[in-house]
Image (cartoon, rainbow, N blue to C red; front, side, top):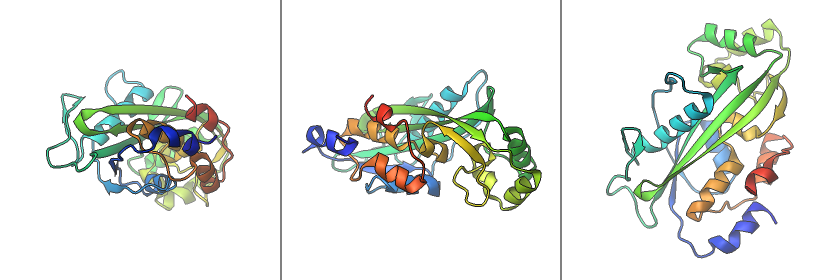
Length: 245
C-alpha cells in the first residue's frame, strides 16, 4: 500500500490546517505542488551564516526552524518556538513549512556563492568529487508545535570542463543555489550519481515532508514517490525506507 493509501484510514475525518510555504524558491514550490495540496507562499529572510562549531546537520535544522518561525505567521524568541500570532490562524490553524539546503565537502560547509568568482571556485572544488547535500524542513503548527526532518544525500559530480563552468556561471543560475549548482539544470548537467533523495538536492525532500505532515492529519492528494520520480526523471531507491520510518 502506498503512502497516500496507508495514511487514509488514520487521517479520515481529521481537520486540515492551512499550509504556508516559507520560501520564495520556485523549485520548492514546484515540488510541493506535486503533492496536490493547496498552499500559500511567504518570504522567510533569515541570516544563514553558521555558528561557531555548528555542523551541517545542525545548521540546516536550525535554519529551517528559523524560516518556519520567523515569517509573518510565526515568532521566534531566544531560539525557541513561540505561539503563532493572534489572528493568524483560522479553522484548524496554519501549518508553516520552513526549508533550508546546504552542501558540505569533507566537512566544509558551502552555502550560496556571493558572486561569480565564488561560484566558479565552488564548482571547481566539487568537480569529479563526492559531497553531501543536507536539506531540512520544519513544520510549525498552532501553539508552537514543531517537527523537523533532515535528509542527507551523497552526490558525485562529473568531470565538467572549465569552459562548461564559465558558461554556467555566466547564466547567473549558480548564485542562489547551495554549492553553486542546480542538479536539474538542463544545460549544465553537473551530477554523475545520486545516493539518496533527489528532491532533497533540489531543496525539498518530499517523502520526509509527507511523513512530517501526517502528524497534523495532512495526507498528499497524490502518490508522492510516483509523482516525484515522474517529475525528476530519477528512479528513487530510498523512498520506501523513508516513508515507512
